[in-house]
Image (cartoon, rainbow, N blue to C red; front, side, top):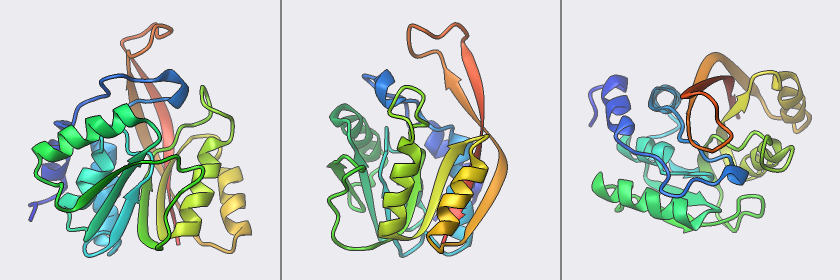
Length: 204
């Protein structure tokens, strides 16, 4: 068992980036400190250990790894991008987590999952280069499948996302003060790193 959040963050930090990042999918790895903070909070709330979780836009598998390391019974690590799933397989294999993690190529706008899940962790595209509203569409699918959803969204959308969640009769908690660090990845980037302010919701 891990000693604490800092150890979890250190392990997640070693999970690298995409071998073939795709701009239209807004592929950037989620910062290790954000992953560790969110999944550790979920662990303390009883949403991880012994639970079935899904990381539906898994990228290179950071949320999946964190869930598995903190005692999830099963982790579904899925992404629409086959290259990303291959990357996740490589990193999760190195950590010895494939006995807990199932990797799937799946478009979560049309999820092919029959059994309900306990917890979702997701950092969806924000609809900048991908279709507008994709983050909310993925959130709605998460809510249909899970008891608890943790989702990251761009600052400035909190009122709308809260309204959508409450219209479904679900409860929402909002945690602010998170920042995502976007490294130079694509040709249009002009700076070595860009900081984006985000918030994290927990929906039950």
